[in-house]
Image 1 (tube, rainbow, N blue to C red):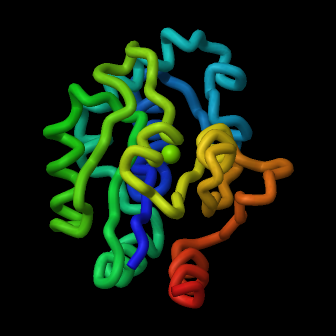
Image 2: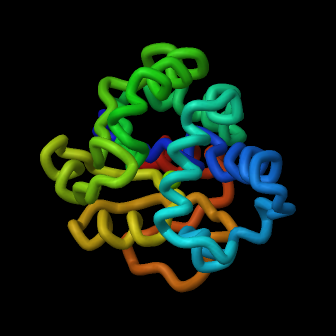
Length: 193
Ligand SMILES: [Mg+2]
């Protein structure tokens, strides 16, 4: 039995995929998911960080978010992992979207997660470090898509699986393992039990 921490956006929920569609439809842009070469889209879309926050705030209230897809393989892997491990979600999604997020999670993952922890109260709030919350919960391994989160958590001595994406390319530290699918995460974790 392991205590496993799991990120939400782009680890379970296809957030950038849904946000790109929302943004293109509402702001007349033609951005592509595969061109998101940095986690911080303000650096490539020519808008400010404040714009990003405001547009995400709008997005969260739409069907684009409500109907967001599940990342490939996540349901199968989480279903297996939940049989023998304790799973917690740690997300930078805002706490004031708790109800909508829990509805989405319940729809796709039923009650597979023991708890969900929000790193910030609202989208403009400064965020708590995932590493600190991992320590409080006794998390032994984490799964995320953001390089800065992976580095933060790994700096606390916790191994991280980094799901390979266009925005997290580059070198990773020793406790970070780049993986290309949830299948790979599952296989690796089951081999280690
Ligand atoms: Mg994420």
